[in-house]
Image (tube, rainbow, N blue to C red; front, side, top):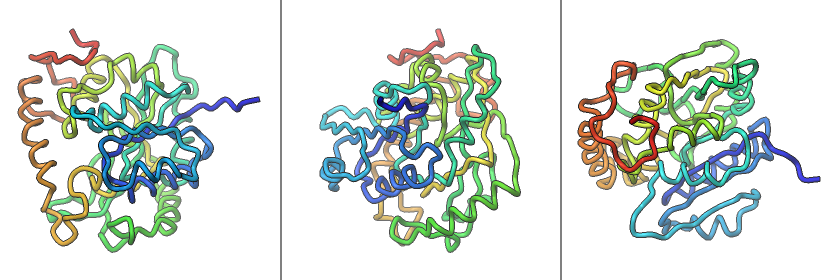
Length: 295
C-alpha cells in the first residue's frame, strides 16, 4: 500500500544548484517526516541544476521550465503547491537548510485549532551577520557572526548548526505573532484560497511582503516559533549569487533591478511601503491579475 504523506516540501530555484543540494539534503536528513514528497520547480537554469535533478539520489518530483516570461520565486512556489497532494505544504527557499524536526514543530501548531482558522506558521531564521547594519535580532530572525557556521555552501558547518539549533530551541520557547516568512508552512487549501503570489512581482523581490499582507487583511493568523529553525544563507539564491564573495554589498545587477522595479510596483499597488502590522493597510489601489480574495 502506498504511504499517505501529510506534508510536501516545495522549493523554487533558479541557478542555485549548490545551495539547492543542501536544502534537499537537509529535508532528507533532518525532517521528522524525512521521506515526505519534495517538489522542485527549476526555471531557466544554466548551472547544471537540470542535469542534477535528472540524476538525483533523493526521490524528488521536479519540473524543469525554459520560458521567456519568468514565473520567478513566487510563481515557482505556486506551481509546486498546485502539484502537491498533501494537506500541508512546507515552503522553503533554495538557499535554506532546515534544522532537525523543523517540520513536525510547525505541524504541532495545528493541533486543536478550529477548522475555519487559516493559520500560517513559520520557522525562526538564523543567518550570518554579513551587512554592517544588520542587527543581532529582529522578529523572526537571529543574526550570528559570520564565523559561527560559515557563509557559503562550501564552508557551511551543518553539523555544528544542527547541534546549536537544538540548544537554541531548548533555551527559547517563543511564539511570535504577526510574523511571516520563508520557511513557512500551511494547509495547501489556505495557500490556494488567497490566490498564491501576485505575478506582478516576478521574478523576485517584494512578492512575499505582498502575500503576507493580503493574508493578514483576510484574517489569517500567524505564528512563528523558535522550536522550528532554518539556516538562511542570506538570499544567496537571488540577491548575490557568488560574485559577492568579497563584498556583500555587491548585489547582482539582476536583483538590484528587480528590487527597484518591484518597490515601485508595490507602492503603486498599496499606496505606500509596508509596515510591520499589515492591519494598518487599506485595500490595494491597484489589482493585478492575481486571483486574490481582496476585492
